[in-house]
Image (tube, rainbow, N blue to C red; front, side):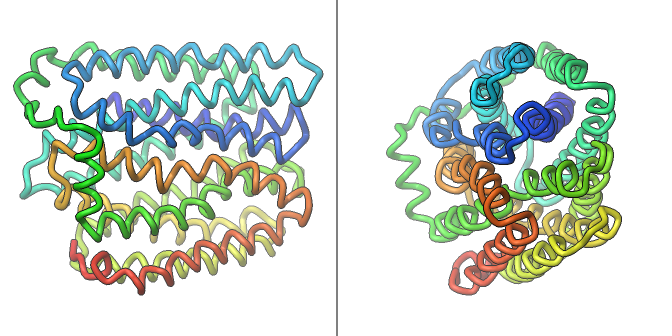
Length: 383
């Protein structure tokens, strides 16, 4: 429950902050920077993961991180009193940094709890259900984004704070003795031990490399679609919710399908990324959001299947004592690059236009799909 509400709040914030920054600064570059800085704290994610693995009172970490996310949007409210675009971007970016860092802690703790609760025999089913819940939560967040922004930017910020507050409440229902019983004392291994474990597993290293390439291109999509809807097409915020919602509906369907497939991980990753890259290139040529919906729905479906395969494979390969550290390493080396994706997407849009940037992003995602063919160990994993 806590994880679902948290995802609703995070999704609503991530989309709303782009729209609000565009409204206040009218600059795709500054809007992309404001959103991209959500990922900058992931540079330190490996250290965060090692700390979470070894820290005994993870419930306290969750409570403190959730409280920080409740109060962080205050800086957004302050930004409304500024006439200086760069100053507005700084205040919005500060909020994104805080929410990005605390969300990394929340995700690391959740990963450890998931590994603890799931037995080996139910990894795939558990991951599928979890992925389905996350997709539904994101879908709710996307719908709420359109509704909130229609009500006004100020009210949107207050409502986002309310969502983060709601995500805090279920934590007080967690048994404080649970972690003491479930924790393995070997989790007090140093950071270097985590690096050795990951480095000794070729599939994990290859997954990080693939994530680096795919995430760099894929993380530009939110900025691209937001600018396309608001500035190029001049449409209201609920159209943004519509097209992003299509991706999540596809993801929900993909999660269900993924739980029933018996296929090699390399097959689904290669086909999903190549097809998704091709469709992203086509989306930039479309002049109506309604024409984008079928393509985005299919992209979401392919990514939903891929996520089930990736998460199931990781839970099978990674021992519980290293789960948060692997998640941290993946975030540090594969997802932290996304902090640059938003500003780069904004800059490319300002220089070359939305259409060309969509084509470039599609090419990067397409390239990541072909790179799977070179990753033998990752390619051969079955899920």
